[in-house]
Image (cartoon, rainbow, N blue to C red; front, side, top):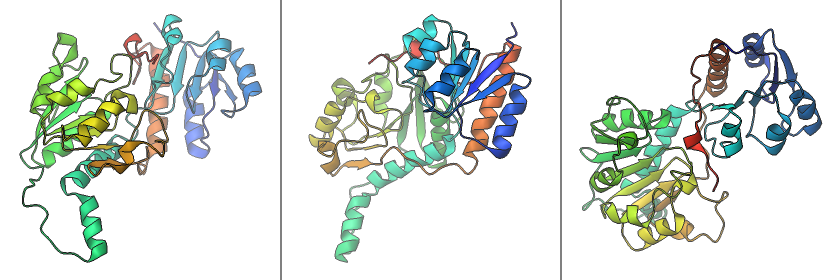
Length: 328
């Protein structure tokens, strides 16, 4: 069934050609522009808007006053802050801009991983001390090792391609992907009852690229760490709460796993007194990645394609479902 768009609230800060493309895609709908923090302008727009294209997440004002809304797009990737039960209870479509930075986020995975494998912290210390030594006698590179990727969305697929370039065997765990994804040797599917345990026990590297939801909250806990190899590394590019941080600290401290790298944490910024900061086998980046050169263009392409799909009644890209609800 086709869906007309009569009026749209837009809180994006795009200008020039990006704004013009969104306007052309929405035409002939009436467009209400508002800054994300301009509550009065947003309230006025919500009297008429049936579509909202937001710079940030869904807030109480949007839900409470947007009685006509049928589709909300949030212009970023992780939508756990927006995937509220009431969104789905009202039948509102919720989409995001996942995939806009997939290649660079996959690079980030390998930055964290190689920093661990090559022990960049010790190398930096040796360079400061002008000390020359072979620190790799007991170490092995990535070639021929097994990488397990949890979540086969945009980032997961990009990571798999790069893992193959390193000559790795690739396992994948996901919710409902069909067939064997490209660059994957073995897949475990939650929708057919597969457990994540096999991936955890077989992998030399476990990469988290899965959505945060009530289903995936603390997916990696003390039990999960106990299944991993003592020589294994964990890389988290998903959301902090996918990992139980207390269990992570204890696993790293006690040598249950060899190391971890994370760009995301349960509380951000990571508190200054978190014991994770001082672990020698932990690499931390502050939830930031170098941008794609065409990230705004990627975002606009996703938005405009979804406007067309919405009008035509086609499935929307990056559409959340009730299984993605996050209440924790």
